[in-house]
Length: 271
Image (cartoon, rainbow, N blue to C red; front, top):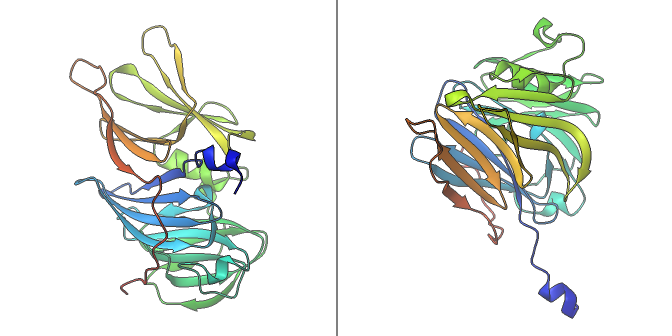
């Protein structure tokens, strides 16, 4: 290690959340350090975030989804040769889609296909996989049913993240912009598909002021969403909560967890 490298602080991990629509449950996906990706179970009532398992590879948050009851999630994983031997990945395949219990990686349903886009939980009992060709299912142990045909609700042009956003209460402004109402006339805006910079961020978030519609850009946010009257977001390797008060002003931000500098922990799923 050179002297310059020793003085350079490590880049904070990027954190992305999936929130259940009908239960106070979430899944937190962490990207980094390096090609390592742990996932966490998030108890939204108690603000308790617990480590599930590590993956020696990459999970794309845009290709993942969480069931309305918060019990299962679906994700697409990519690993390299080293990743297959790293924490949480013991598979000989380089890319797959899995249905698992929320906050864990151990696959209940396991599909192999190198051209998969991702998956969506249609409800608590059905899921669909978006792929250029039908993935090969190696085993199935979950109580969920895979729907083969593309649902009509997707339309002909909606991508998986776009469909998920519309389903979860966002409104589409144009091809790249989505907005979600907050309390007191505020709303949350995100732009997707922009140039990838700042270590891989291609979605930009901002808050829009209700008075003169001034847009307050949040350049260091990796993810943000609404939960009741609360604004949840991640920034600089931390997850934050801000609450809208009765006078329509924001409370001071509360840090729910700081995941900077946490090490690798090999864990087996308890099921």
